[in-house]
Length: 402
Image (tube, one colour):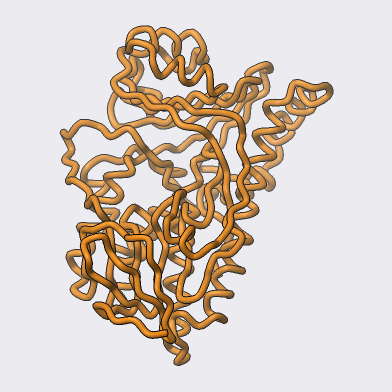
């Protein structure tokens, strides 16, 4: 079967953080890229109102964004670095604090907390320097037409785009993945998260991000620039709905009553949202003429903030493997190329997904002897230098790529 459409080497459906990163990666290599995104990001200035959704970008993600020409724009606007990560069990006194200096490589920070829309906007600005990237402000229609070389997608505005490879970067509810008939393995944690952007009373906390684990679920503090923070409260779906509907002052009081003293007090809750917590993993990362990246392929429990970092690693790996394949004379949709990508990325993503599930289960269970074992484990980890540095390096950089 053949299809006609505007020709591209690769068509990326979804211009969020991961899709835009892949477009910049391939565009800098001179590839002809079509990037489809219905709602291009709005610019964020240093004095703009804060956006609610934020991510904890590790050092490897920041390095990748720097290579793509986006990090300097992010840093010049607002990105809050943190050099410590605290973890403790809400029912005990044992604590574990990771310090950037423990990495012994001159590291000054472990990561940055940055608004998702700021990252996306910086990547879109970086695309201005990529003349071979064409952006299409449209939605993807529900048809994907395979061809002997890649595939065609058909947009809602009537246009068709042909790519030697189609990339689904269209999120956890990916229509492209559904159209391709790729099933999902879904884990429902029967938990919801209440996310709030707040003004704090103690800006001196801004160099640390922490999590306390309770039987109800984790509580997290993510620092933002100035006397601000993003708070995440994991709880039951019913309680999350109740909290999300409270007046702002009552929600502020609820946070102060439930969160530990390290919160330091809140001046106000300025934004809030609630969403269910699920993990999902695509049974396959590729189909005929199609490959999945980011949330279209996998989502994990967000307690460690690793989701977007895994997505950037997808983009980084796919860009590298496609460039290597082209140098060998292989087509972008060659099954051996896509299989190599799937093998490399599934291993990393599955390990992180399993780790997050195990950490959550281990910390939240109150069945004897787990509470005592948690306390012993945290005390031991606090003094286990090599093991602690290994965990710290994985969190800040991830496993070796390639």
